[in-house]
Length: 86
Image 1 (cartoon, rainbow, N blue to C red):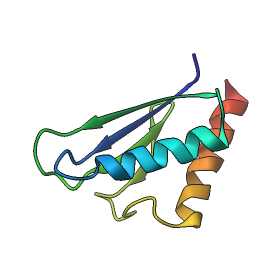
Image 2 (cartoon, rainbow, N blue to C red):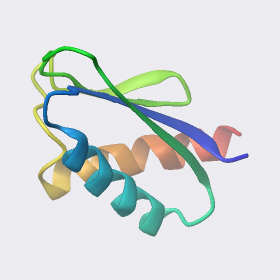
Image 3 (cartoon, rainbow, N blue to C red):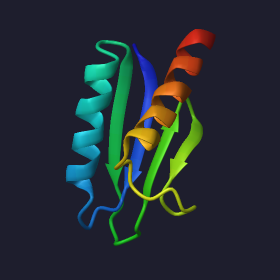
């Protein structure tokens, strides 16, 4: 069982963004993560990423999508820190 990474995304159209992020994280941490995604039933604007239960990226709080290298590296740092504690 890998480190849990949960992504809650707007079910009205963000699934492709979730799948892109999932692939990128799996490529960065092969075999280390247990990534699950949950699309909301309504249009919410959510793209929330939790690592080991801790919210580390929130579109609703102004982080936007994980669409830049700096945002991705923020997730990578959070995952590395969580893996070091595991």
